[in-house]
Image (cartoon, rainbow, N blue to C red; front, side, top):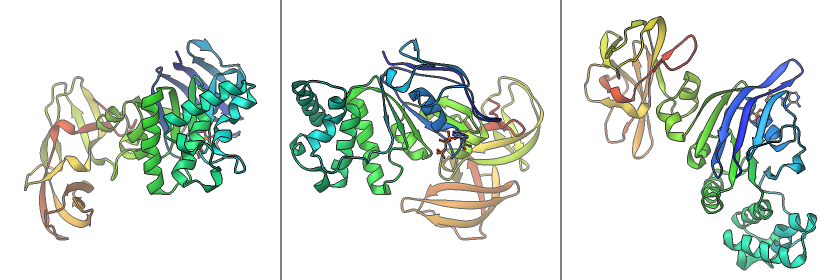
Length: 355
Ligand code: ATP
């Protein structure tokens, strides 16, 4: 069992709080991604799990054992920084086997384990080649092989693809997830890239200013963002927000935005008079001459199969993703329908979702 349980984990650097009372559980075999903008506390959280940084308070349990005060090498984990650093003067076999040699494993054992690892990564035909002559993708696989050869309880990865160009990064995202499907080792992966997170994660924690704003599956986070920050951070273009003010009664089925009634899923509780925001994703808007939202086309961005259309409405600019074959010209008046089942409501003061 390599479940990771984080309880009220906190880290202060002097008077600055980098991580504020985090709580989450990564189940055995899960691929967990910590996602958020630069400086939000992802790396600090990861370093505490690794044992490279001690918490100011709170606990970390690995497979049920409290390791909060243990040193890094006493926790059975592998920390993968960038998947680049290889020993250029050694061949593939020696590069992959190095951590086992350093650990003092007998040669026969190393040989067997290296060969198994290479087969898993489909680089067994390269074992006796020098790493200096390898293509980029194979080099990355060798680096991965070196990280997994010890078979640690879990992997911690801090932006391992950070320095790769886009095409290569997409390939490695796919490879990493594939590898995970085969070995199912508990993994904690840090990135600021939402596409990477969505593509790989079983669970995501979205962090902002040291706080976990939401913890859930990629689908939950995309479909039901818990805060306006999450709704804005995930999705490209991000979720649209239109302001409106008022009170809502339990059971309300519509709200009035911009003079028009917008159907919303039934509310379970009363909402006191508040400044609210109606949130909707660009792909949940239809250009059908509807009357939920009226405006004028501001501009379009052609993307091949879809286009992003900016529409100026009384409540502000709204972006829609619609099929590319709809012809629209700047200045043209349009009527839009919002997909009622996919709307979110937020309290603007707290930023939290109302339902
Ligand atoms: P990035 O993607 O830029 O690494 P991050 O989300 O991983 O961002 P952290 O590296 O965890 O963020 O840093 C969180 C905050 O804590 C930052 O404001 C950083 O300046 C601060 N911080 C991190 N380590 C230290 C330290 N040793 N001393 C003081 N402040 C620190």
